[in-house]
Figure 1 (tube, rainbow, N blue to C red):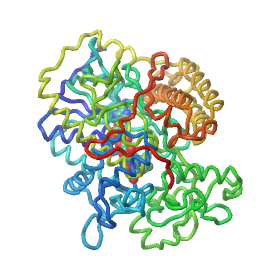
Figure 2: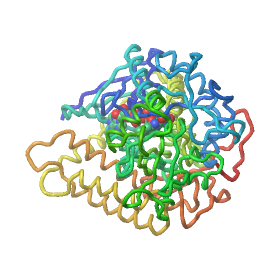
Figure 3: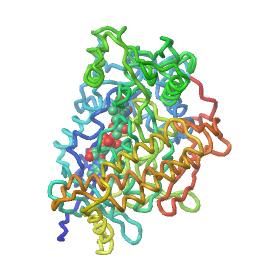
Figure 4: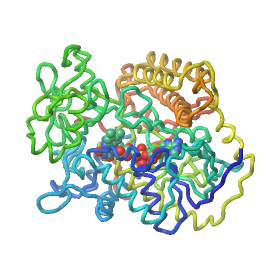
Length: 586
Ligand SMILES: Cc1cc2nc3c(=O)[nH]c(=O)nc-3n(C[C@H](O)[C@H](O)[C@H](O)COP(=O)(O)OP(=O)(O)OC[C@H]3O[C@@H](n4cnc5c(N)ncnc54)[C@H](O)[C@@H]3O)c2cc1C
């Protein structure tokens, strides 16, 4: 097979908000940038973000970045790195204004300022009254941001490889990343993209679970590519379950619904969140609300004939507010539930939503790995967005902080890469041996005949993850889960594509995705089994308390030998005092 080659200063893998924000920074600095995406860029999952992006603009209620920083650290259950969190919260206002100037059509207040709504886990004055920090373009904020960033990239002459699938990173003997092997989905032809720097921005892995809010493409490919390149994954036990998914289906009803005044009730019509979070009530942190719903249903207070969901009430808000502030959400409710949200309560249940863990990076977006005394960057490799773990979300992300994360660290990585390119002006030579492994991987799934289908095995994996690695966990359940995922890994060898002469490239892509999901499932279950405490989204029934003495540390999972290692949380912020861990109540 002949291997076509292209050369760029920077290869960005992923065209969501993270990848596009970084690419824009680079293209505007006249770097030669390639963006590879397995779907057309504006179909990346960022497009689905509804609720908004956090910044302490204080347009609606008093606010400042220091309160935002406190809320984010508390939300993270003190596992977030405080230097990165300070950096993000301080940068937020400038970045939102920059988005506004780039063309994002934010919703407006009467006085013309950007509209901001209250979201979960937000407070004024370090834990006081509810804040209103989430800047919104109705309930289509991600759509507005992604389209704006795409258009700005077209203007800045970023080079797009649309519908190309990245298979593996290329690494030389000294561990420097030299680009990646990608494949055209249309033709199946491989392409080697050589780059002085490579940025992973491949998004999350919500497809690990059967019921989830994520796009079908969110299979965590970048995470698996990093694992195969010998890089560990950080904090993979922390997976966010969003409290309000459409019951039985999983699509998201944004927290904006509760931010605008919606509330939850059980079958007795009781506003049960008042018992679990007396102050914040329905706007407590997501992990807290998800667990509360789960307990209500478990204890027999669920609604409906099978008692397997609770109700979200937004009908009292009135048609005008619903149409103005939550139009897309109302649309989803009508389409998927055949319920009129202006009249009737909406059945909801927690659904897998966000990958807090990921590829370890510093706040410049460089991928960093532990060495004997500290850590060091992998030369030429960066990661931003949901595939990265910088870590600003720690054990639980606050709503509205992920769109912020992608633009803040997308820009930071872009800036750092500009500096790197100044010091590394030439491409390093690529040896054939550097490419061999990736080329061998390329044909791994060209198998026909009798065997297991990709879709079937993916479905089994998702059901296992949901049952054995869900909202509540125990040693016994996780151990069973680990064994079942290992069985699935064995059965990958029996996977075949189509039993006729032609293999479609889309089928081949789904096989690559399944292989990636299996690796990430192992990382998730193994990390969850190892962490013997409850913190944020990781809730162990057998270890119900947070244990700062032994577990205030980040976990690292290595593919080789499925080894776990740990590294300290960076508790020291950049300029202000540390927020020391304390009991987390809402
Ligand atoms: C329904 C929903 C609503 C949300 N609402 C909000 C919200 O209101 N506020 C908020 O802050 N956050 C929200 N989030 C979270 C937030 O939207 C995401 O975390 C964020 O947009 C992720 O951006 P990203 O750039 O990291 O990745 P994505 O936008 O997921 O993009 C990933 C990119 O990588 C590409 N890619 C992946 N694998 C490969 C491969 N192998 N080869 C080539 N390309 C590849 C894809 O094609 C895509 O372009 C929401 C998430 C969901 C699912």
